[in-house]
Image 1 (cartoon, rainbow, N blue to C red):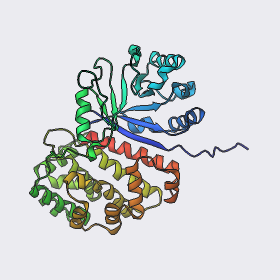
Image 2: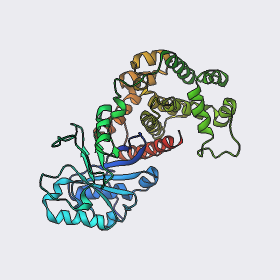
Image 3: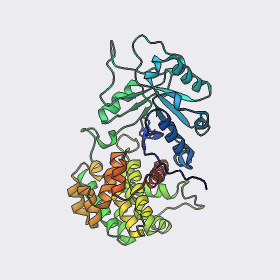
Length: 396
Protein backbone atom coordinates (compact mmCIF):
# COMPACT_ATOMS: atom_id res chain seq x y z
CA UNK A 1 0.00 0.00 0.00
CA UNK A 2 1.36 3.44 -0.92
CA UNK A 3 2.26 5.69 1.97
CA UNK A 4 0.34 8.94 2.28
CA UNK A 5 2.22 12.22 2.72
CA UNK A 6 1.02 13.61 6.05
CA UNK A 7 3.24 16.71 5.92
CA UNK A 8 0.97 19.75 6.41
CA UNK A 9 0.90 22.31 3.64
CA UNK A 10 3.36 25.14 4.37
CA UNK A 11 2.10 28.45 5.68
CA UNK A 12 2.85 31.17 3.16
CA UNK A 13 3.12 34.92 3.74
CA UNK A 14 1.98 36.92 0.73
CA UNK A 15 2.27 40.65 0.08
CA UNK A 16 1.50 42.67 -3.02
CA UNK A 17 4.15 44.94 -4.53
CA UNK A 18 2.78 48.04 -6.25
CA UNK A 19 4.19 50.79 -8.41
CA UNK A 20 4.21 54.50 -7.60
CA UNK A 21 0.60 54.76 -8.86
CA UNK A 22 -0.57 52.10 -6.34
CA UNK A 23 -1.13 49.48 -9.06
CA UNK A 24 -0.22 45.92 -8.11
CA UNK A 25 2.58 44.52 -10.30
CA UNK A 26 3.99 41.58 -8.34
CA UNK A 27 3.32 39.34 -5.37
CA UNK A 28 5.96 38.53 -2.76
CA UNK A 29 5.53 34.88 -1.78
CA UNK A 30 7.51 34.12 1.37
CA UNK A 31 7.46 30.40 2.10
CA UNK A 32 8.23 29.22 5.63
CA UNK A 33 10.55 26.39 6.56
CA UNK A 34 13.93 25.97 8.21
CA UNK A 35 16.93 26.76 5.97
CA UNK A 36 18.12 23.94 3.77
CA UNK A 37 16.20 20.81 2.84
CA UNK A 38 13.08 21.77 4.82
CA UNK A 39 12.77 25.07 2.97
CA UNK A 40 13.36 23.37 -0.39
CA UNK A 41 10.61 20.84 0.39
CA UNK A 42 8.21 23.62 1.41
CA UNK A 43 8.89 25.52 -1.81
CA UNK A 44 8.35 22.31 -3.78
CA UNK A 45 4.93 21.86 -2.13
CA UNK A 46 3.82 25.43 -2.81
CA UNK A 47 4.89 25.59 -6.43
CA UNK A 48 4.01 21.95 -7.08
CA UNK A 49 0.42 22.49 -5.93
CA UNK A 50 -1.90 23.60 -8.74
CA UNK A 51 -2.99 27.16 -9.06
CA UNK A 52 -0.49 29.67 -7.68
CA UNK A 53 0.87 31.26 -10.86
CA UNK A 54 -2.50 30.95 -12.58
CA UNK A 55 -4.33 32.59 -9.68
CA UNK A 56 -2.03 35.60 -9.50
CA UNK A 57 -1.65 36.14 -13.27
CA UNK A 58 -0.60 38.51 -14.75
CA UNK A 59 1.43 39.50 -11.68
CA UNK A 60 5.02 38.40 -11.27
CA UNK A 61 5.95 36.24 -8.28
CA UNK A 62 8.88 37.36 -6.10
CA UNK A 63 10.36 34.59 -3.94
CA UNK A 64 12.76 35.63 -1.13
CA UNK A 65 15.56 33.12 -0.49
CA UNK A 66 18.42 32.94 2.01
CA UNK A 67 20.47 30.99 -0.52
CA UNK A 68 20.17 29.77 -4.12
CA UNK A 69 21.27 26.33 -2.94
CA UNK A 70 17.63 25.34 -2.25
CA UNK A 71 16.77 25.68 -5.94
CA UNK A 72 16.92 22.11 -7.14
CA UNK A 73 16.35 21.25 -10.82
CA UNK A 74 12.90 19.90 -9.99
CA UNK A 75 11.97 23.13 -8.22
CA UNK A 76 13.26 25.30 -11.05
CA UNK A 77 11.09 23.29 -13.43
CA UNK A 78 8.06 24.57 -11.46
CA UNK A 79 9.17 28.23 -11.45
CA UNK A 80 9.25 29.63 -15.01
CA UNK A 81 11.71 32.52 -15.52
CA UNK A 82 9.06 34.69 -17.18
CA UNK A 83 6.91 34.67 -14.02
CA UNK A 84 9.22 34.08 -11.05
CA UNK A 85 11.84 36.44 -9.61
CA UNK A 86 14.25 35.41 -6.86
CA UNK A 87 15.22 37.89 -4.11
CA UNK A 88 18.40 36.36 -2.71
CA UNK A 89 20.03 37.52 0.52
CA UNK A 90 23.09 39.75 0.11
CA UNK A 91 24.81 37.45 2.63
CA UNK A 92 25.60 35.09 -0.27
CA UNK A 93 28.21 37.59 -1.47
CA UNK A 94 30.56 36.21 1.18
CA UNK A 95 30.58 32.80 -0.53
CA UNK A 96 31.88 32.65 -4.08
CA UNK A 97 30.21 29.29 -4.73
CA UNK A 98 26.81 30.82 -3.88
CA UNK A 99 27.57 33.88 -5.99
CA UNK A 100 28.29 31.54 -8.89
CA UNK A 101 24.96 29.75 -8.36
CA UNK A 102 23.16 33.09 -8.22
CA UNK A 103 24.75 34.27 -11.47
CA UNK A 104 23.83 30.95 -13.09
CA UNK A 105 20.15 31.76 -12.39
CA UNK A 106 20.56 34.96 -14.34
CA UNK A 107 22.11 33.02 -17.20
CA UNK A 108 19.02 30.77 -17.20
CA UNK A 109 16.78 33.78 -17.75
CA UNK A 110 15.72 34.49 -14.15
CA UNK A 111 15.53 38.00 -12.78
CA UNK A 112 17.45 38.21 -9.52
CA UNK A 113 17.19 40.84 -6.78
CA UNK A 114 19.95 41.18 -4.20
CA UNK A 115 18.07 41.32 -0.89
CA UNK A 116 19.92 43.72 1.41
CA UNK A 117 22.95 45.95 1.07
CA UNK A 118 26.32 44.73 -0.08
CA UNK A 119 29.24 45.59 2.19
CA UNK A 120 31.27 48.63 1.25
CA UNK A 121 33.94 47.82 -1.30
CA UNK A 122 32.22 44.73 -2.67
CA UNK A 123 32.16 44.87 -6.46
CA UNK A 124 28.92 43.56 -7.86
CA UNK A 125 28.45 41.85 -11.20
CA UNK A 126 25.97 43.72 -13.42
CA UNK A 127 23.50 40.83 -13.02
CA UNK A 128 23.34 41.50 -9.24
CA UNK A 129 22.65 45.22 -9.22
CA UNK A 130 18.87 45.04 -8.92
CA UNK A 131 18.02 45.26 -5.22
CA UNK A 132 15.36 44.38 -2.69
CA UNK A 133 15.62 46.44 0.47
CA UNK A 134 13.93 46.27 3.86
CA UNK A 135 12.83 49.87 4.44
CA UNK A 136 11.07 49.30 7.74
CA UNK A 137 13.62 51.49 9.54
CA UNK A 138 13.97 53.95 6.68
CA UNK A 139 16.30 54.27 3.74
CA UNK A 140 20.05 53.82 4.25
CA UNK A 141 22.14 56.87 4.99
CA UNK A 142 23.97 57.87 1.82
CA UNK A 143 27.21 59.77 1.65
CA UNK A 144 26.81 63.24 0.21
CA UNK A 145 23.04 63.20 -0.21
CA UNK A 146 19.85 61.13 -0.35
CA UNK A 147 19.93 57.40 -1.00
CA UNK A 148 19.36 56.46 -4.64
CA UNK A 149 19.11 53.08 -6.36
CA UNK A 150 20.75 52.65 -9.73
CA UNK A 151 18.09 53.38 -12.32
CA UNK A 152 19.93 51.44 -15.02
CA UNK A 153 19.50 48.05 -13.34
CA UNK A 154 16.08 47.21 -12.06
CA UNK A 155 13.32 47.06 -11.20
CA UNK A 156 14.15 47.56 -7.54
CA UNK A 157 11.92 46.48 -4.63
CA UNK A 158 11.40 48.31 -1.34
CA UNK A 159 9.50 46.29 1.28
CA UNK A 160 8.14 47.05 4.76
CA UNK A 161 7.17 50.46 3.42
CA UNK A 162 4.76 51.22 6.24
CA UNK A 163 3.84 54.89 5.95
CA UNK A 164 2.88 57.41 3.28
CA UNK A 165 6.05 59.38 4.01
CA UNK A 166 8.24 56.28 3.60
CA UNK A 167 6.41 55.47 0.37
CA UNK A 168 7.21 58.92 -1.03
CA UNK A 169 10.87 58.61 0.03
CA UNK A 170 11.21 55.21 -1.66
CA UNK A 171 9.63 56.44 -4.89
CA UNK A 172 12.00 59.42 -4.90
CA UNK A 173 14.93 57.05 -4.32
CA UNK A 174 14.07 55.14 -7.50
CA UNK A 175 12.24 52.02 -6.28
CA UNK A 176 9.73 50.83 -8.88
CA UNK A 177 8.13 48.12 -6.69
CA UNK A 178 6.92 48.91 -3.19
CA UNK A 179 5.39 46.58 -0.60
CA UNK A 180 4.16 47.37 2.88
CA UNK A 181 1.32 48.77 4.96
CA UNK A 182 1.45 52.37 3.76
CA UNK A 183 -2.21 52.24 2.57
CA UNK A 184 -3.23 51.77 6.21
CA UNK A 185 -1.27 54.85 7.32
CA UNK A 186 -2.10 57.69 4.92
CA UNK A 187 -0.49 61.07 5.15
CA UNK A 188 -2.04 63.38 7.77
CA UNK A 189 -2.35 65.91 4.96
CA UNK A 190 -4.39 63.51 2.80
CA UNK A 191 -7.70 65.02 1.74
CA UNK A 192 -10.56 63.42 3.65
CA UNK A 193 -14.12 63.08 2.39
CA UNK A 194 -16.11 66.25 2.94
CA UNK A 195 -18.98 66.04 5.40
CA UNK A 196 -21.73 65.85 2.78
CA UNK A 197 -19.97 63.16 0.78
CA UNK A 198 -19.25 61.07 3.86
CA UNK A 199 -22.85 61.33 5.07
CA UNK A 200 -24.12 60.22 1.66
CA UNK A 201 -21.72 57.26 1.53
CA UNK A 202 -22.69 56.15 5.03
CA UNK A 203 -26.34 56.32 4.00
CA UNK A 204 -25.58 54.15 0.98
CA UNK A 205 -23.73 51.65 3.16
CA UNK A 206 -26.71 51.54 5.49
CA UNK A 207 -29.02 50.75 2.57
CA UNK A 208 -26.69 47.98 1.42
CA UNK A 209 -26.43 46.52 4.91
CA UNK A 210 -30.23 46.23 5.23
CA UNK A 211 -30.80 45.02 1.64
CA UNK A 212 -32.83 48.08 0.63
CA UNK A 213 -34.96 48.32 -2.52
CA UNK A 214 -33.16 49.01 -5.80
CA UNK A 215 -35.13 52.25 -6.19
CA UNK A 216 -33.65 53.64 -2.96
CA UNK A 217 -30.14 52.72 -4.08
CA UNK A 218 -30.72 54.34 -7.46
CA UNK A 219 -31.90 57.60 -5.91
CA UNK A 220 -28.82 57.85 -3.71
CA UNK A 221 -26.44 56.85 -6.53
CA UNK A 222 -27.71 59.75 -8.62
CA UNK A 223 -26.44 62.12 -5.94
CA UNK A 224 -22.87 60.81 -6.21
CA UNK A 225 -21.39 61.42 -9.69
CA UNK A 226 -18.08 59.67 -8.93
CA UNK A 227 -19.72 56.50 -7.64
CA UNK A 228 -22.22 56.52 -10.49
CA UNK A 229 -19.43 56.82 -13.03
CA UNK A 230 -17.53 53.88 -11.56
CA UNK A 231 -20.63 51.66 -11.48
CA UNK A 232 -21.41 52.27 -15.16
CA UNK A 233 -17.73 51.89 -16.06
CA UNK A 234 -17.69 48.54 -14.26
CA UNK A 235 -20.71 47.02 -15.97
CA UNK A 236 -19.42 48.17 -19.37
CA UNK A 237 -15.96 46.73 -18.75
CA UNK A 238 -14.43 43.60 -20.28
CA UNK A 239 -15.33 41.75 -17.06
CA UNK A 240 -18.96 41.55 -18.21
CA UNK A 241 -18.37 41.36 -21.99
CA UNK A 242 -21.75 42.83 -22.92
CA UNK A 243 -22.90 43.28 -26.50
CA UNK A 244 -24.83 46.50 -25.71
CA UNK A 245 -23.79 49.47 -23.63
CA UNK A 246 -25.38 49.98 -20.21
CA UNK A 247 -26.39 53.63 -19.75
CA UNK A 248 -28.66 53.72 -16.69
CA UNK A 249 -28.55 52.67 -13.06
CA UNK A 250 -31.70 50.60 -13.52
CA UNK A 251 -30.02 48.58 -16.27
CA UNK A 252 -26.91 48.15 -14.15
CA UNK A 253 -28.92 46.94 -11.17
CA UNK A 254 -30.87 44.48 -13.31
CA UNK A 255 -27.70 43.19 -14.94
CA UNK A 256 -25.74 42.61 -11.74
CA UNK A 257 -28.56 41.24 -9.61
CA UNK A 258 -29.16 42.18 -6.00
CA UNK A 259 -26.36 40.13 -4.45
CA UNK A 260 -23.63 41.14 -6.90
CA UNK A 261 -24.80 44.76 -6.89
CA UNK A 262 -24.32 44.94 -3.13
CA UNK A 263 -20.85 43.46 -3.35
CA UNK A 264 -19.64 45.68 -6.17
CA UNK A 265 -21.08 48.82 -4.60
CA UNK A 266 -19.31 48.01 -1.33
CA UNK A 267 -16.01 47.84 -3.22
CA UNK A 268 -16.81 50.80 -5.46
CA UNK A 269 -16.76 53.03 -2.39
CA UNK A 270 -12.96 52.63 -2.47
CA UNK A 271 -12.77 53.33 -6.21
CA UNK A 272 -14.02 56.90 -6.03
CA UNK A 273 -11.72 59.24 -7.91
CA UNK A 274 -8.71 60.20 -5.81
CA UNK A 275 -7.67 63.88 -5.63
CA UNK A 276 -4.33 63.04 -7.29
CA UNK A 277 -5.86 60.71 -9.89
CA UNK A 278 -4.03 57.67 -8.49
CA UNK A 279 -5.60 54.30 -7.75
CA UNK A 280 -6.83 53.95 -4.18
CA UNK A 281 -4.46 51.44 -2.50
CA UNK A 282 -7.25 50.44 -0.10
CA UNK A 283 -9.41 49.00 -2.91
CA UNK A 284 -7.52 45.72 -3.55
CA UNK A 285 -6.90 45.30 0.20
CA UNK A 286 -10.64 45.56 0.91
CA UNK A 287 -11.34 43.07 -1.90
CA UNK A 288 -8.67 40.74 -0.52
CA UNK A 289 -10.08 40.72 3.01
CA UNK A 290 -13.64 40.31 1.76
CA UNK A 291 -12.83 37.40 -0.53
CA UNK A 292 -10.73 35.54 2.03
CA UNK A 293 -13.32 35.85 4.80
CA UNK A 294 -16.03 34.71 2.40
CA UNK A 295 -13.95 31.75 1.23
CA UNK A 296 -13.14 30.65 4.78
CA UNK A 297 -16.84 30.84 5.64
CA UNK A 298 -17.71 28.71 2.61
CA UNK A 299 -14.97 26.15 3.32
CA UNK A 300 -16.31 25.75 6.84
CA UNK A 301 -19.87 25.12 5.64
CA UNK A 302 -21.30 28.61 6.04
CA UNK A 303 -24.58 29.29 4.25
CA UNK A 304 -24.99 31.93 1.57
CA UNK A 305 -26.23 34.63 3.95
CA UNK A 306 -23.30 33.97 6.28
CA UNK A 307 -20.91 34.23 3.34
CA UNK A 308 -22.44 37.61 2.46
CA UNK A 309 -21.90 38.87 6.01
CA UNK A 310 -18.30 37.64 5.91
CA UNK A 311 -17.68 39.41 2.59
CA UNK A 312 -19.21 42.65 3.87
CA UNK A 313 -17.15 42.49 7.06
CA UNK A 314 -13.94 42.29 5.02
CA UNK A 315 -14.90 45.25 2.83
CA UNK A 316 -16.03 47.39 5.75
CA UNK A 317 -12.90 46.63 7.83
CA UNK A 318 -11.04 49.49 6.12
CA UNK A 319 -13.78 52.13 6.24
CA UNK A 320 -12.18 53.83 9.23
CA UNK A 321 -9.05 54.43 7.13
CA UNK A 322 -11.09 55.45 4.08
CA UNK A 323 -13.23 57.95 5.95
CA UNK A 324 -10.67 59.00 8.56
CA UNK A 325 -13.13 58.44 11.40
CA UNK A 326 -13.50 55.96 14.29
CA UNK A 327 -14.91 52.55 13.44
CA UNK A 328 -17.33 52.93 16.37
CA UNK A 329 -19.02 55.86 14.61
CA UNK A 330 -19.23 53.95 11.32
CA UNK A 331 -20.69 50.78 12.82
CA UNK A 332 -23.13 52.83 14.87
CA UNK A 333 -24.46 54.47 11.71
CA UNK A 334 -24.91 51.27 9.73
CA UNK A 335 -26.96 48.89 11.89
CA UNK A 336 -24.86 45.86 10.97
CA UNK A 337 -25.50 42.23 11.85
CA UNK A 338 -24.15 41.45 15.36
CA UNK A 339 -21.43 39.12 14.00
CA UNK A 340 -20.13 41.82 11.65
CA UNK A 341 -20.27 44.55 14.31
CA UNK A 342 -18.43 42.36 16.83
CA UNK A 343 -15.75 41.57 14.25
CA UNK A 344 -15.22 45.16 13.17
CA UNK A 345 -15.22 46.72 16.62
CA UNK A 346 -13.52 44.08 18.76
CA UNK A 347 -11.98 41.53 16.37
CA UNK A 348 -13.94 38.95 18.35
CA UNK A 349 -16.21 36.09 17.36
CA UNK A 350 -15.28 33.73 14.56
CA UNK A 351 -15.35 36.48 11.93
CA UNK A 352 -13.31 38.84 14.07
CA UNK A 353 -10.66 36.25 14.84
CA UNK A 354 -10.36 35.31 11.17
CA UNK A 355 -10.10 38.98 10.22
CA UNK A 356 -7.33 39.43 12.78
CA UNK A 357 -5.37 36.55 11.22
CA UNK A 358 -5.77 38.03 7.74
CA UNK A 359 -4.48 41.36 9.04
CA UNK A 360 -1.60 39.54 10.73
CA UNK A 361 -0.51 38.02 7.41
CA UNK A 362 1.21 34.85 8.65
CA UNK A 363 -0.81 33.02 11.32
CA UNK A 364 0.69 30.39 13.57
CA UNK A 365 -0.55 26.81 13.10
CA UNK A 366 -2.05 26.88 16.60
CA UNK A 367 -4.09 29.99 15.73
CA UNK A 368 -5.55 28.29 12.68
CA UNK A 369 -6.23 25.07 14.57
CA UNK A 370 -8.14 27.00 17.24
CA UNK A 371 -10.53 28.19 14.51
CA UNK A 372 -10.84 24.76 12.90
CA UNK A 373 -8.88 25.84 9.79
CA UNK A 374 -6.18 23.57 8.40
CA UNK A 375 -3.17 24.80 6.43
CA UNK A 376 -4.59 23.72 3.09
CA UNK A 377 -7.85 25.60 3.65
CA UNK A 378 -5.89 28.72 4.60
CA UNK A 379 -3.84 28.39 1.38
CA UNK A 380 -6.98 27.91 -0.71
CA UNK A 381 -8.52 31.02 0.82
CA UNK A 382 -5.34 33.02 0.12
CA UNK A 383 -5.24 32.00 -3.53
CA UNK A 384 -8.94 32.76 -4.01
CA UNK A 385 -8.59 36.13 -2.29
CA UNK A 386 -5.56 37.29 -4.25
CA UNK A 387 -7.10 36.17 -7.54
CA UNK A 388 -10.25 38.14 -6.76
CA UNK A 389 -8.36 41.23 -5.54
CA UNK A 390 -6.19 41.29 -8.67
CA UNK A 391 -9.26 41.12 -10.90
CA UNK A 392 -11.01 43.87 -8.93
CA UNK A 393 -7.94 46.09 -9.22
CA UNK A 394 -7.86 45.58 -12.98
CA UNK A 395 -11.59 46.20 -13.53
CA UNK A 396 -12.28 49.19 -11.28
